[in-house]
Amino acid sequence: EAYKKEMAAFEGKTPEAVEAFRIKFLGTKGIVKDVMGGMKEVPNEQKKAFGLVLNEFKQFAEARYEELKAATATEGGEAAAGYDWSLPGDQIGVGTRHPLSIVRNQIVSIFRRLGFAVAEGPEIEDDWHNFGAMNLPEDHPARDMQDTFYISQNPDWLLRTHTSSVQARVMESQKPPIRVICPGRVYRNETVSARAHCFFHQVEGLYIDENVSFADLKQTLYFFVQEMFGKDVKVRFRPSYFPFTEPSAEMDISCLICGGDGCNICKHTGWVEILGSGMVHPKVLENFGIDPNKYTGFAFGMGVERITQLKYQVNDLRLYSQNDIRFLKQFTGAV
Ligand code: PHE
Image (cartoon, rainbow, N blue to C red; front, side, top):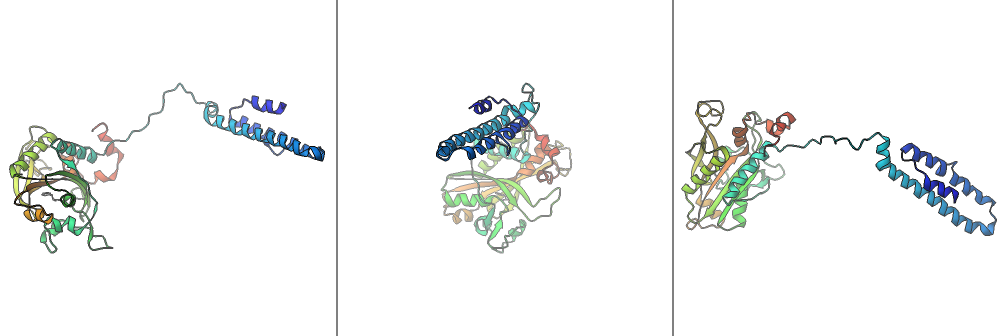
């Protein structure tokens, strides 16, 4: 009982003190062992009762040891290691949002305000969703416009070359009216340089309803660039060609970098191309059982890297995926 009292009163809170406790009571030459050794002298008929008492004593010592260890690990240990709880804490490095995430979120939020919902789909696609459904049958020369990575196990599988594949999946599963934007990563087999990369990010949009017109397309995209770049930005549409839209147009905005005076970004033209667009081709609507006599729609697609380049003057595409902290830190606080 005296030993028990001594153990209970033991105050050491440093690792060294707790180790001294272990050696004194539980060590190979410790008190518990010693008392246990006394068993030999106990007459046989008392051994059972004595054993119970000894066991209880041993368990008490072990429990107390665990208790002291736990206490040391919290307050005691830190006090002993010289912690001063009144000092202010260390700075915790908080990460920054990636510039592409910042700009993608801005694009998404502008279209959300116009009532577009966000749709996502797989990056590994089949030929139908990426090409066939988009009016690019096999052997269509326009397939060469987008150098495709194929998955070697199955010739039908590929890495999507545009997020039009997501539009295909939306038309497959929803009926008009449809109003979605599809942000996501896309892949093309291009040599990596400052101006091209084997993957990049797109936001594509699709709006299908009765009486959707080219004027709606223009107004929607004009609203978008004004929200994105400010009220002073000018736009122009140039006729273009995409197999999945007819008519098709590319949209340029006035160069924000040089204000039209001429610079490398706009190749001294004063204009920068930012997206492709057009009225959804009737064949595409038919592919999904949407009646082209009843419904019309427009679609558009833009590269997030390009928009980010214009917004933040990033002039080398490789910077986006090198994860260089000196680059990423420059976007601290941007949202
Ligand atoms: N899918 C086209 C591309 O990746 C962009 C686009 C989308 C063009 C929708 C027109 C309409 O280049």
